[in-house]
Length: 459
Image (cartoon, rainbow, N blue to C red; front, side, top):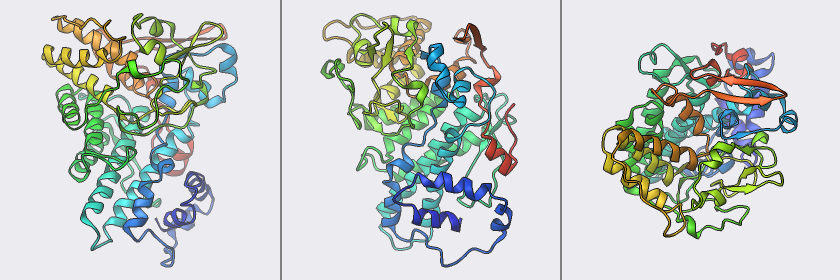
């Protein structure tokens, strides 16, 4: 832990160095000797609330490390042969669902943010006499970050949650301490999700209802992530309850009639729908110059649906590229934070599945009214629960693309009767297939992590 504290002090103006430095330390032949050495008591550590607040406000270290590999593997877009060939090997393998263990930052970066969260939690325990409100916010934020990043990792590196097998399925290595000498082991899926939920629930009473800044965690953000977690577990009643708790505190929607469809960046960062702001690094496969929107997906938007022009731009060859990112950036960074539209759709789906048709209709119509040209939206009125659920799932696909949520939806819906899908890619005259429940719905762990710690690799 002490060398990591030193890295914090020596690189606090350049946090991006830490993953590299960690790999250098852990990858050397002297690693074992180093871990056995006595810690140097002179090495500085964060020692004040101001130090911890500085860590909490370091956006690049705590808000931009979410993995993007799942969106590269999802079915919202396609690549031409030429654009596929231009990618590095890692992204080519993600795109074609190939067995591959050189994962890189999609594995290491989230754990780097978890490291910071653990540093904050451990340091707080040794700071007596500090402002209780600030202590609570930092502790709650650290718990939120640790839970949210562990959950994001589980969507790639653990098999989909299943009540019948969760106690024996392999989950992810849980990092609950900052000490690199504490080598992780694979938890079970049940233990992984239990840890995520424990952290998020513990964060709720400590966090403010309204954050000072949208990139800081808050009560509605914690409720939103809990709703997301329970949805992925197919525990729909709990998902609906936490979505409702979030919306009781924050429920603002953007009327897309007020958004410029001609703008290259229609949505600003921290826009009114954003509850918590976070993102990935920009994956090359999803740049607007390469990624072409799936034609069936684009064709599913009605003529008067403003998302058809706000979310997409036309390429010279007639294909479509995505531009509706809530990051406020023009690059391929993906918004992975929490927003009102997602939470509203979670509550709607949970209500439909739990037999509360009217509540589900209210939420669905409340969202879509803001997405259609003024005066053109005809509210959904179906009383058929199955038809309503189908409509909600369709709108979820159309509303939440490029947020790394589609992959988790595919994983969970593959376990539901009538919603399992087979995915296809066509490259170089060869058709590649990903069957429902296929092994490649779970990524291999990064080879360096396996070599260093000896954790069990995914098949």
